[in-house]
Each structure stands twice: as structure tokens, then as C-alpha cells.
Length: 102
Image 1: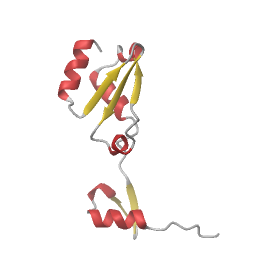
Image 2: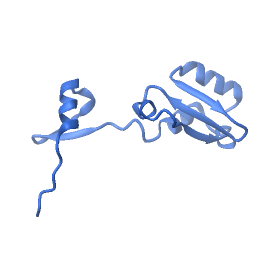
Image 3: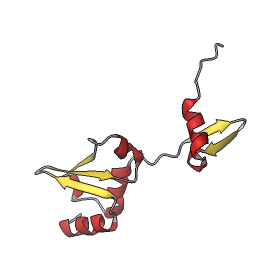
Image 4: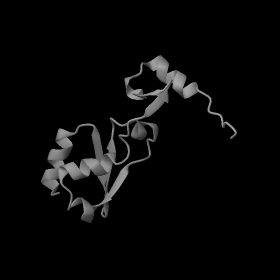
């Protein structure tokens, strides 16, 4: 990715913050809760690797493993937690997990 391509990428993705030093570039996606919950964290990509990435590959590296859909099994069926209202998500968070002896 050239510096011009990086500038275009950042203009298209206003949610991505960026800074760099002489050897690496650091990215944060403000739309992903993991970054919001960890203010000192960012995705570090060395500048030699960054030069080889396409915009799609860069986005994949920034979000790698962080856009995982949480699915849970309740009363015999699976459901996406992202579709639940705030109260139902709160119930899931408060749920106690116990080991059932075999």
C-alpha cells in the first residue's frame, strides 16, 4: 500500500485511527468494542508488511479476530446475541456458569 493509497483508505474509513513511527504503523477501529474497552491497544503492522497489503487486506488485519459473532444456545436453539435487546444481553452477562459433575 502506497502512502497515497493509505491516505485514501483512512479517508474512506473515518472510524480507523492511525499513527506510525520509523518501523511500524498502528491502527485502531473505533467501531469495534475491543478497541474501545482497551484504549492503549492498537494493531501494529510493520511498514514493510504494510507496503504489501491491499486496502481489503489491511482492514482484515486491523479487525482480525475482533468481529466475531457471539452465538449462544438457549432452550435448544442457537441465536445471535447481537440481535438481543439490552436487557436480554444483561441477563446473559449475569448468568452463572457451573460445572455439572459427570
